[in-house]
Length: 492
Figure: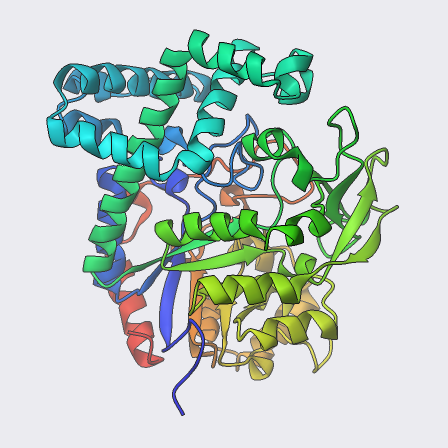
């Protein structure tokens, strides 16, 4: 019997967010990386959420569930379109992160001016069509960002009351006074979408699928919460009553207090989960496959009183996962979704996952500290799953292994038959040998990098989401070496 669900055959993947490319954007480096994957026989490029971020750069706390991050717009590609003078496409050197961010902002402003001066009739029609198609979110988002800039990046809850509460007259006045700024935000989303779709088309043409990531929750300071307050658990002043997180776990002894407002599921059910259908539609226009982060929150979620400083005082609350996913399957069939089923997982969560045939996740960093029934041990893997050495929240495999006690390191070598192959390639080989149909390896592990190259440390807010590799770090034999293993384990 042929496999059902989104994972039809054995494949290998690499996890790398576009901001971790040498340029940090969707330009030539992204195309070079797609070609590198194709040369290695890799069929899947996994990324993190592509949304516009707050100052902490977390792609899991975005300004919108639909919008792309303008900081990923490629100046080089904008110049090739004739919308930016070539000299403006060169980043300042040397420059710190703030200077680079300001430069990218100026690139977007200059590109819009160039578009207005020299765009073809076809380009203008494409912009109009994009704005019309995406108006269900773009209109609110563009005004939200323009207002946020006017008020020095203050969250919407601290804006003047009439704007905070979306008084119609105040909104109309703002649209008029900020018409140029609103047009700028629309253009940036259009340009991001064009560049992303061109990259996706190139990757698909080389046999590489794009695997995206969708957080279950949204940031409080976001266009989504501002525009649709009725869907979120807020008080009469727009402040969260309860916030999301997880209880104490592997990553934190006090749990994680994410701070996202919880959904009012009973309100969402009244219109057939329209907000979720629109959100999933946006994701499926970006990706070939989508991972839903914190899937267990669709069965039950950790509800923390907003007044609590940590996640310890939270409790589990049931969520309407079955009717929601029934609605998603009715609209999008097949539904190309992977369930991030890590953490405190109950049988009810597994039943929800399996009812809709969704692949789960297995992480080898979690496999060896426990008993024989540990689901992350390779002999307990299931074909309908995605196996990772580690995820974006884990240390690199080399850093993880170096930090383990000697006894546990010896146990891992014993399990893996005392292979002389060094870390991290020993664990890469283990992931590729798994029965899981998709094996995804973080780029850091292909490059053999240590903890200094970690992407994120859960529970912390400083220094995350900034890692980039350089092409000089990629040994010449990397693609060939990985291709050999993919062929050996039937993943080409």
